[in-house]
Image (cartoon, rainbow, N blue to C red; front, side, top):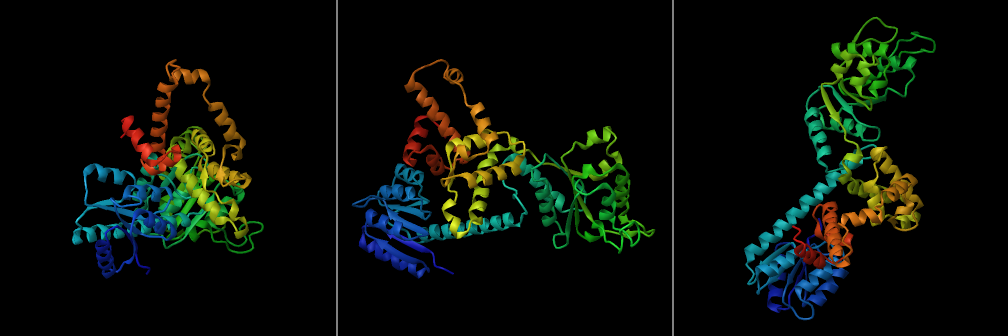
Amino acid sequence: MAKTRVLVIDDEESLRHYLKLLLEREGFDVKVAVDGEKGLQQALKEEFDIILCDIRMPERDGLGFLEEFRKSGRVGKVIMMSAYGSRDTAFQAINLGAYDYVDKPIQRDELLLAIHKLVEREKLQKENRRLQMALMDGYDDEGIIGRSESLKKVLVRAQKAAKFSSTVLITGENGTGKELVARAIHRWSDRADRELVDVNCGSIPENLLESELFGHARGAFTGAHRDHTGLFEAAHNGTLFLDEIGEIPVPLQVKLLRALQQGQIRRVGETQTRDIDVRIIAATNKNLPEEVDAGRFREDLFYRLNVVTLEIPPLRDRKEDIPLLLDFYMRRFNASLTVQQLDHQLKGVSPEAMRALRSYDWPGNVRELKNAIESAAISEETNQLTLKSLPGPIQDFESSATPSSESMLALFGGDLSIKRNTKKVERILIQKALEETEGNRTAAARLLDISHRALLYKMKDYEIS
């Protein structure tokens, strides 16, 4: 395993020597620099996991180093050191992106504790990222991506349901990810090492659906040249996912109900029954109570299926998840590129495109978003998704949603003062950027196209916490 790399930046030679020996004895790979300028050159030339940096130094002080280092986009964690410690200096260093702050004279145990805690924290974060990526890769299509409360509630309930063999009914519009939730429930269950068999009940002709579900005996009908094992038997001891359950014809609903109630099936053309142990997960984009009232779906089957219900929220009701979904699909697009296509890698989204993507209503939900990103990525001539590369409906929606000058004046209460209204706009934009980045000030500063320090000053000026 590669050693953790540490860079020590301090103009005091004896301290540099002491820290180098101390950290090397702890198993770290240590480099040193005599001032902030040389330290910055070293940090930009090589990758370091941890940087110990003095605050008071010639050429470039520690805060100047920290600001330039963060602007470079490097990811090493910086711990500041100072014999001139004060709360204001510590606060300033932390707000500029420092991980921690220690006072001089350096206390050996205190320093080592801070460094080892940082190393363990980074290991945990890397493992979490690895597990998250492994989980994403396990999904067939989109991946369950999002931090919205509405989606979290569904997933928490799905995890609880996975521990039991109760039937689960998943409802939601097309493209919301019902199949993904069904697969997640199977993976979280004690049947995860058995088969997950899925069938789209709306894609199989009515005269063949019974045979597909329950199987048939040789000679049961014209063309039945051999015995056929149905999907219920194929899913024995595992999970059967019945997608678009609302499309099953009423006559077949009776046989399905019998299978669910008795745990037995009968192949078409046979008289004997076969015992089956199958966990049923069903999904539909229809309103089944309305289907029951209309006589298109049996009430007793509905109640048999409706033991645990999970309603997947549409994307328009969880738009805060759009930046995460964008990041996921852009990374997936980049990973699919060949060596010859690498100059088409996506590295970001323009503010106009992001605004359009967040304001659009997404009638096709996550599936439509995925397709829109892929379409835009193919037509885009830069490494950034722009408004003009997005599909027409999204562009049209954005242009229709652009506020008129009258509505803007209404927002400012009819006040035409540029000075006063500039502050209002700045405050709104800062709050929006912090909301989109979940309070990450460094990322928010990049969205706002200002320095991290300028953002902190403006937040203080506008009393934004």
